[in-house]
Length: 288
Ligand code: C2E
Ligand code: MG
Ligand code: MG
Ligand code: MG
Image (cartoon, rainbow, N blue to C red; front, side, top):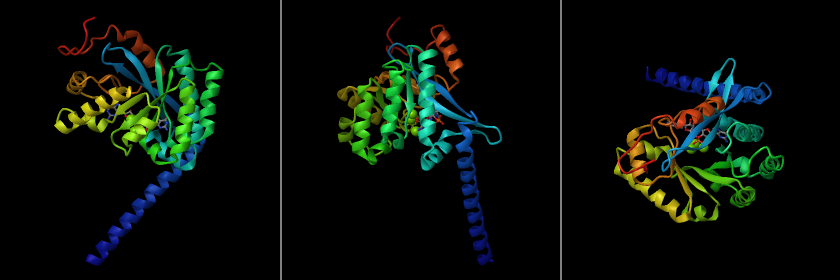
């Protein structure tokens, strides 16, 4: 009957909710142990300069390999880490690991580390960066911090002060996932961004809708006026690369170049990069 099927739906819904809550409780419990058990790792995804077709940087992306649960996506566990405050320890670990990889294994490469809004709100974050530089566990100018627009919605004053402080230390700041959030043009001027990362959503539609192309063009113009570098996120297809070269995007990051990889693989990729064929589009790249 209608009544019982309605109840069935409610029961199905409740059990699904229970499922989500159980998964979350499991992740929370296991994540508390993840650092001590050495289950976290940092992968790197290269960024390629479109003028020179060289690997100009890499984004550090945290990975969690759990012995029973398998690999868990940061898209799933970073929000859990943020909600529980574990992000401060995890973030500090990623920052230290990426710094030592950068200094010891990836000389000359700029490494971008993601920071959650909660991290940037804390003075301890600035101190972590300062100490890494003081102990020379990081080369000045090698570190870039990526933040998202959600940060701009919270305690703006503290975030602004902390970002200015780390920028004074010689750290670059990139605005991640640009174009999908709420940042006003006024914020773009108030915050000391060195780079805009154009969100994957626009790149995905770059070759199918004229809107996306117009938006990307506008973002690039804006960045140029404000003196910021640009990187397109989530570039998967040669046709997208061709458009991006045409409209003058600074650099790209995406599966077309490479997926995020362990540091040893990035070292190898850097060594073989110059010998790899590079995509050439008429007039887009200078002759070498
Ligand atoms: P994000 O910072 O925007 O990182 C880019 C994400 O896009 C990464 O997902 C990357 O693997 C993925 N990606 C790169 N190229 C392509 C492409 O061509 N196609 C598609 N479909 N995806 C691509 P990942 O590694 O799963 O990370 C997801 C998010 O988790 C990150 O988004 C970031 O917000 C967060 N995250 C990752 N590592 C950290 C970290 O160490 N700290 C903090 N606070 N957040 C992190
Ligand atoms: Mg990022
Ligand atoms: Mg992003
Ligand atoms: Mg993101």
